[in-house]
Length: 314
Image 1 (cartoon, rainbow, N blue to C red):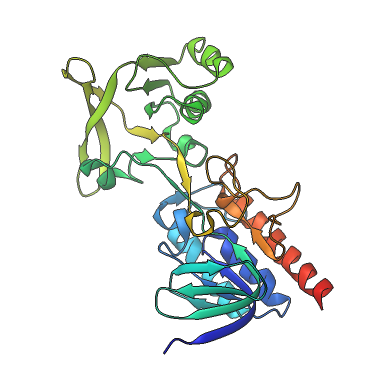
Image 2 (cartoon, helix red, strand yellow):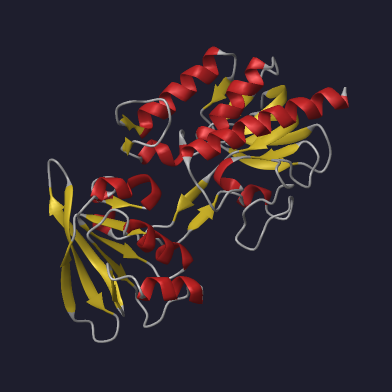
């Protein structure tokens, strides 16, 4: 028999956006329920050193920061479920959401904060050095490679933007692309080609990442030529994978307004979606900044907007 939970606010997802929304909703006495999803803590749960979250004089660890947010959300009254929402019905209120464990949530509002995942190359050695030389966020980790040589994998706007950004820190940036031309906007390409710190390797794909063990530290990349299959290597302590992100929004496909990349569209300066009572916060709607602090800010906005919506409804 499935259990039914009736709540004013259901929060789907548990990164900085979800936990912050939970803190604000709980402090407004809305007694929110949060379903943490597949990756409790979101992308920060696999991030090692965090140096750009305000309020900490020393470098902190991503998983620790998420654990603190979770504790704070629970302390102020959020009920957290380590579960996964599998199905939602948002045609009419109350909204019905069903979880993997058999719970049914009946809610007046929903805050979607299920995040986005960086696309990875999915080669065996990649996971070993993720957080130990391999990153998917130059804004987060570029500073750690001051005066060192780094590589960027990709050929679209995000890859070119990351490469350009990294020239602020790195002594040299090598952009590795599997084709002989970039997909990035022409104005970005022009800036890239004109930057003396950037070198481009065309028609190359990553075959393997190699480095030390205990501790794991990246040392070099083995590349394969996409035309003649010859191998080469590049010695770098840092690599940034920039082949795109996928927002975790499949649950709401054809139920809520999204753009062509499946990011949820919200009203200007708001987290409100085109469905009244449904709000979106964090990387499900933000493909520009993708930072923990901006996600937290959007989580705060979503909770305040949900509170206002509930007050006007009653």
